[in-house]
Structure formats: C-alpha cells, structure tokens
Image (cartoon, rainbow, N blue to C red; front, side, top):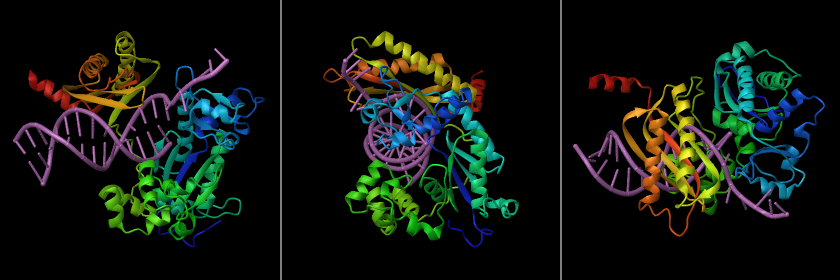
Length: 391
DNA sequence: AGTGTGGTTTAGG
DNA sequence: CTAACGCCTAAACCACACT
C-alpha cells in the first residue's frame, strides 16, 4: 500500500462509493428481516424493473451476476439470457433513501465537509482535519489509510454493507481511485501515482469522458488516459471544443480544482417521465395521456412545493417507438408550482405537438414515453413582488 | 455583443 | 407462450430573435 511521507500541507479528499448500492441495501434489508435468508450478494442477483410494464432494465447487480457478463443498464430479458437463474428483485426507492441517509450520517460524524453527489456516493474533505486524525493507527496502517479503513469498517459494522474509498488531493483523482478494484477496498491515487495507475486506463474510463467523446478520441488514436494527457491542449480543444477540451486535458493530467461543497444544492429543474405499458397512437392518445400527465404534474408539483420552488418554463418530452425524443417548452407569465397549471400547460403542449406539424408522426409513429419538466426556477420572492405590484 | 427562448446532445448515477 | 432498451438532473451547445 502506497504511503506519502507527509500529509500536513496538502489537500486530502476521499470519495466514498457504496458497492452495488441498490443490491447491497436490498440484501441487508432482507437479512435484517430474516437472518436465515440467503444473502443476495453471494448469488447471481440484480435489481431490475418489471418487464411486462416495459421498465425492464438492470440498475444494479451482484458480483456473481457480474461474472455472467451482466451489466447495469442492460435489459432484464438480456440479462436472463446470460444467466437464466438470475434472481431479479424490484426497485424500492424508499428503502434506498433510508440507507443512503444512514450512510451519509456516518460520513458526517467524521467531517462536516461532506458533499453527497448521488444517492450512493459522496466526497469528504479532510484537509483541515489533519491535526485531529494524524495519529490514528488502525490495522498497522497510519494516516490517512487508517482513517479510510476506519470509515469503511464502521459503515460495514454498523450498517452491514461495503464501500470503496478513494484517496487523493482532489475530487477527480479520489473519484478515479474509488473505482479501482471492488468491493470493500481503499485505494490511493496521488499525483506521483498517476502515470502508473491512471494513464494506462482506456480513455472512456476517465470521469466525464462518455461514449461520444471517447469515440471521437479513440478514432484519432487517443486510446488511453495517458494518450490524452500527452496530447496538446489546442489539439483536444479543436476536437472537443474549448470547454470540454480543457476539461479532458486537465483531468487526464490529474488536475481538478472543484471544491467539496457541503451546502445543500438548489435544484435547477424538476422533471418526471413515464414509459407506458403500450405505445399510444395518434388516434387513441387522449384519455391515457391525460391520466399520465396529471400524475406527472402532481409529482413535480409536490416536489416543488416542498422545496418552495416556482418554474417559469414548463415543457414536455415525447419518445417515439423508434426511441427518438422530442421536447417542446413554453414560458409562463407568472412562475408556478400549481399542479393544475402545470397540467394544463403540458396538455396544451402535447396537443400542439401531436396535432401540429412537428413531423413527429410520420408513418405510424407511436408514443412510448411521455415526460414533463419545469425549469427557469425562482423561490417565489420575485413572484410575490410582481403580484404585489399588480395591485 | 449580450440576453432571452427553444430545442438537442452528452454525461452520470 | 413470449417478452427487451428506466428515470432524473445538469450543463453545454446551437439556432434564432431582439436589443
């Protein structure tokens, strides 16, 4: 295990990631209810949606399931072909939220500088806590490995699931480190380790370099993170544009200045969408779509009211049987979070889109999914002011 | 040149 | 009996109109 000589004067960031979160949490929950039950983590198992209502996608899988080549994001039907004995458990978001909160609470008991970035991962900043933890020793390990193991093992003993911890001096490197071998591991990725641990990796494994970008880069011979790191900044910008070119160049060289922000993030948009059990056609869409849009409007409205958020823009998304997505939006005179206003605005947009000349309905296209979104948000202050001014 | 609006693409979990 | 491909958020980018 790599150790630096001195940690007193450099930043120290951890990235903590729950291993197969949805599956682990489900396994723990089932064991809590019945300790004799088989542990889902020890057999080929996965969290997946219902095939019959066309929500059949794998969102997490056990390590034994991974050995069958099952990936998260692939269809349940496909996964069952690879492993007919796969145990598929439905999703349960309330359960995940419960364990997520307990997980974050433990992190917060070690540092106030915790930034939760998704339901199952967070960054912790220990830069200013050197004096508090510098003498911690655990299993013959010294700081900061001792601290990482302490956190990891505490989560396991108190909550029953494993995590990976990535250690470095910035968020990008800590994130990359936590993604190394799993599960239940601590990894470091300091600047002096980049060439050995990060540069040999394929470019698509760089955080922020997705399918489209990695395709562009590999087609030009930039196949590894190291290749990108050794490409001129100007060349990357000419391929990817100014913004993304800079991001890929500096990231592949391990440079990242993003701060760990423990303050609550304010939403910039709310959206809700649903894949329907069967596609809607232009002839029969009326009654079905009204029900769904009412549902989606109420969902968004409830969340916005809880956050005291109001939207000036309401939009809809339609996905065709060919998986082609169309969206349209409209601006409101007065921002709203009223489900009736959202509903009627969305219905108008759907009618306009379907009956107008959008070109969506060519030769018998049908609608697979309908979604609505609310954006251009304010907190109601401006709204109160403008209402007040009217009188 | 900057701002508001509408729409698509990319990314990540 | 068979069966496929979710849901949510954020940001960048592009085009266009208006100023």
